[in-house]
Image (cartoon, rainbow, N blue to C red; front, side, top):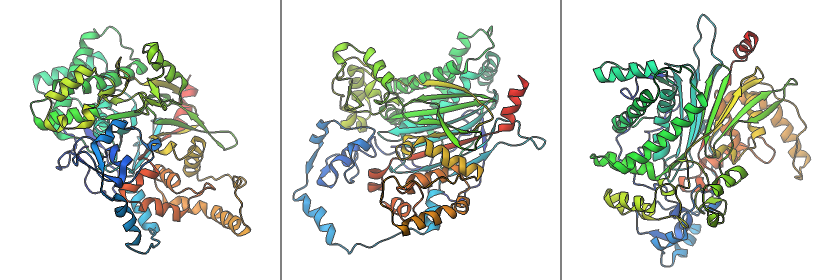
Length: 562
């Protein structure tokens, strides 16, 4: 779907980089881009029972329940495959190839996998003091798709105040999530800049002078930038700030953060669509912008400036605030809403935006037009463009696109587009001393863990305090020996925390390895991490987590000043 990062590195030291706009962006690896639909959902549905005529579209894998797929293929896709002759012989024959053997990863091997993508950043101190409301953050990713479709970003705003952090969940490949993770923070930063600074940046570009850096990125080496597209992305961003200069005469100095976030999200999505329509004379870039537009991504972004916390969410990733109560216990405060069929307001919004005769077809089987789980997303032009525009772009596009059955397929009951929007829902929260941390995570985490468990596990990890609550067995029949084992495990739980130096890693360990009693089972964790690529997606989604830790002393000082 996109250029995949190089080999995973273990034990990477923390580093930050200040990038002057796009000029010093991290280089992308040299592998060729994969065609659209790298992890074609078709192969997941029909598994080993069929082979695909479009080998460049699909990779063979086993059956995945449709409930686990963010995008469900239409039944018409069945015409693209035909059953293998005597296909059952292929599957049955494997049973006799070898004697089943138990294989478990050792604890060091498990740790190597879990820590391969972890990253930590601590906000620097000045004169021995941290004057920021953010102490730092931990982040990590665990793939299920190959390549992983999730992305993450974190950066400090240099020309304004505050820090930006975000998680991005791709579907139909990683092209869109990769582009959004590279570009969205620049659009937000530009939206927050005062008129004078925008003029200064534009004058520097005109005169060929060095540009003011507007973001300091905090990135793991695997979190790469696409160097080939940097010029294209820069030109689109420049057009945006030129329009902001024309619209703002400099009379108003107040910047509305909520409005800036909404404008940035919408403008980036519009640029993704426009770039795909216009195309590029460079065949590589032309195919890239089309793959970005035809795939999709959700986004959950936090902007922290002093005690002002804004969360902008598009899709079904979540932001959860960890609050420590007076008795030391932990409670979860949700700062985002899922944009899917479980959200009644989203269902009502969709129905109101389309004619009444589409009320029963706009959402079917809890999916947009019966296909897409999130009701808001970047890209996904198949749910936004008119049918005529889609056909025109595909026919004039490269052969890889024109030969791709997915891009030519029109969703059913497609009458009054657009059906999808990237406009975020923005939530504001004023930080308090009891607000200790924020968890941003893609839905791969929330599908496996309850929000209260997430906050409790992170809170206990950060404070080192574990409340000795009665062990709940949830109706299971537990022998005396099993209960003794649970009590012994709890007694050693304190020391096990120290094997993780990263809160996001610790949370992923629980998300993947928790047993029915809520404790990490090494055997289960080993089995889950040993699954081959074609099986891992059957059991879980990609998981991406950022844990932001707040500075209670600084937050309290803000309150005392008022």
